[in-house]
Length: 126
Figure 1: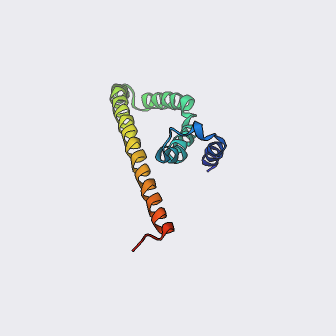
Figure 2: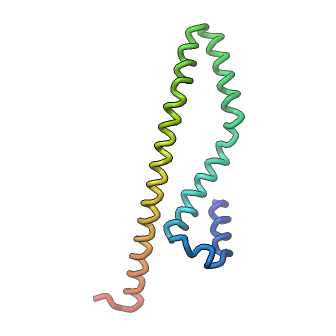
Figure 3: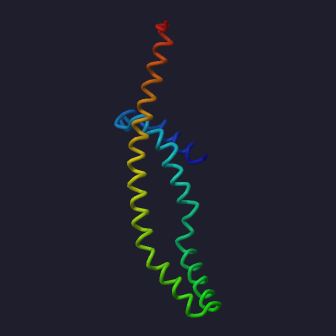
């Protein structure tokens, strides 16, 4: 995608000292997962204004069609907002932990591939 290309081009222009603290796994995650999150944000940022408008419209339609019993559904929805917030924060914490493991895994795989490349290029295989 375009964002991946921009990140890759920027990383190529950086000096080695700027990225010396980053592992290969972190760079790979930056190129794939983090840029995908930015793309998701751009895709769904319009919900900031459209979600309240849509919710208001739906509430008005529910009340006009069902009358006062629609209030039960509306109250239940409002009560469940904190529950959804807690679940979302837990998912975010799990995602951060997963990214740490993904960084370590990619670093290990990169080291293994470098070792295999060294063995192949040096003709040390049996």
